Image: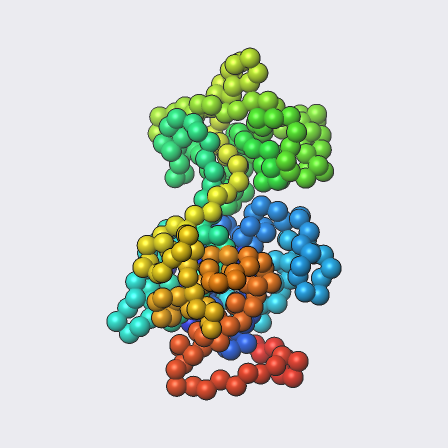
Length: 337
């Protein structure tokens, strides 16, 4: 079992979770960040990296993906560590008041405080309604995310979806996989027009196959996936021999195992004290869209404010006998760890 020890475990690598690393770093608190997605950025990276955001102070507009890049640069001096592509599954408070977290892949995280910054919760893939789909999950041929593109080298792939993820991965894997077929239920893509145009060019060049107005309706195989059936107009069916099927229909937020931690909840959100965004469990904080309190606004900039006060509260929890004097970065700069 891989084990990590840190001051604060931040659950959620979205913009609020990343900025919490910065605020904690100013207090010389070490952070380890966990996210179920395979990359940092949360919704901003997974759903709309090219979408402009207009309410970040100092930026008349900034692309969501660029905001995440800037936040990663901002926290570099504090050397945070990350566990990505794993969801926190189990939680325990130890006898000495610290916490133990266990992820879906068995990683153990020992920490003195927890900051839940999971946005709307842990994101789970939207799965198509296909019989026996679950039979081929867990490395047997059905994948809802692309964690390691090289895993698909020289393989036969069918990707399903019409958004940015489906288009982007079709383009990327075209040069890596043996065969790539993109199946889309419509004729117009929801993703970026330039990406849709690239996919059409790849189709015309014979590098990928594009199947429109169709759905993957059946999966076949014994121990592993061997083929899929595609159903098109007029109920026409075609069976393709494949190694992997990758349905990319977006993500849906769920509170997940955090809902079973005994924290006080309200409408699937974690109730907090706005003094420091602490929850009903001492040492556990909730910031960003996952929390609720009177007057709550689900805005990134509000989450940044919550992260700053959370870090102060966590410092007092970890070092109850130390007095902290606020130091301004305009005077002292940014410390390193």
